[in-house]
Image 1 (cartoon, rainbow, N blue to C red):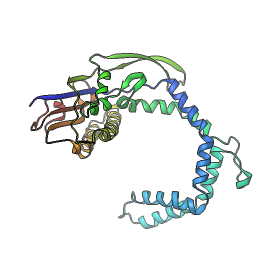
Image 2: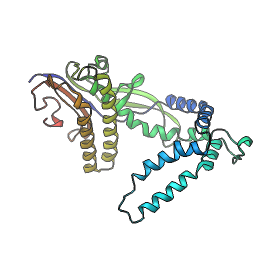
Image 3: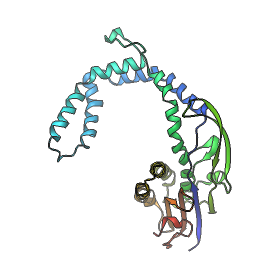
Length: 302
């Protein structure tokens, strides 16, 4: 069977520029009053709080309790009581976070309120340290181009514009970032690994499905790559492989269910290349009838 298209992208965390983190902080700080007004407009009284926040929170949480636990019913009831009675505490938290003391609501906040803006600024370095793993999959278009998850699904969903971001050599970019240890700005070089690519972009999905499966695929691939990366960084090989297996199963149960199998045989998934000590995402399309990948051999047979 002839290979129609094959793509392999190598995963590496990508730092976020300091200017993007600064913009994130400023944007959220400027939204503080809007968030406050929206919350109080939505949650007008205790009954509304119970209906919109407390009851749904209890329903979601209670499913996590093992029904065979000896005191399961008592534990769930105690949590329900605490949630249903939490309106005044919730309201004070909202006022003190976004507005400050409010005599009209008879709420007196501690010194330092409202504290939302300060807390956002404090979390800037934490966001910067964590988002690098997500960007390793999704990319940052203006800085690094489209990410490997986007390219992997793009080449098999008719997304021709991804070809401009596929590289046959490593790319080094110099950016200014916040050092997560010191909090100071510094210039560093980021090396983006090359891609493997054969054939040409093709749309293998059923009519009307392509643009919707892209969103599914990018989310699942990113989930798998980030968690597999964490496991690998801690030397947890079996857990890393389990994450990869689950992510590929999710892709099989969603994205690949929408392939036009009358015309195409398709592989899409993540893998770990021992020879390179690196996570990769790979996609491939052949004519219908093929049972073994010719390009994404790391993904195994159909």
